Image (cartoon, rainbow, N blue to C red; front, top):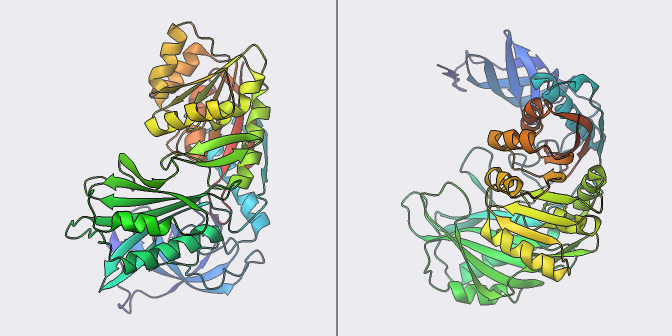
Length: 458
């Protein structure tokens, strides 16, 4: 059982805490009555006044009331921005210290799970992003009707409280401007808004993505239900906005806990927008994965390709290939590339991108990596080099078993979660040496970071 504190109870007084360090999500950590206490917004070495929100058997959640002794690493939070919005967990911390924190997160994860030889791993300093602000090229805003007023914006973390069209300083100016203009059009055309309480059909989410190289903007209207009055007229009006080249409808239902549904239909415009990385072109359909920080993506992929150290006679397996970015970038260096991806639209994009870049030695297969990779090995396909870029959950245990069996000579692991990376390395280190780990800061002002890991057979 846990205790919820009543803020109106005079017994539940404010407490004074000295912050010892930051947690993996950027929250300040201290101790109160021999329990660990988490205080978002507090920094190491600060003395703060906090109010307990919930006490659990092993830890306490609290909120910051005020700062008694301020850290020299504290910087002003962005002006005109609601601090309750998620995605700015480290915006009050000097950027140089954010970079140190992200490297420390990797070291702490290795220390916790202790894969073989972890104390000797070379973990390099975090590579800073060229732009600390306005780097995100994709905005995914929720829409609701509340007391007769349409709100379009972001939910507060772990809640359904929507902040209407917030100023988001990590979001690109063009995507935010497009979202604001779409809201006006939704109001003008009386588009029905989805009602999550009564489960009425309607517009639920508006996604705006811009290609960095071409400035093309792709809009996706995520709806519950298919037929919405004036939706096609809305699409035509959106197409008149600056740089918008396509509008799609993605359909979901109330049983789906994810934002995106499985059916996507083009309402008007181009099938894809086109972006560029390191001289190669990539066409992107609405559901295709593409890094949110296009400028820093160049650094991330350049480091990954350098770590692979490919040879002209090798076969490269590009697992979790998405739209084929890494495999296509590496195709000139190897005999052949085989990409594996589960999302059908991404496979279609990848094969289109192969043609777009006149690549002759790359093929993309739809399916799960843990199923397709053993089939390739059984069919005599040499697995000389491998690159994996899995979701935050890390590699499936069945895939790790396959890797330990087929044993590619070298592979690179791109991870967005130090904890699952460290857990995976426990098993992978049975056969592989970890040569190098390098952090690339893809998402400044947040605790998130991408690790690029080079592994070689012992």
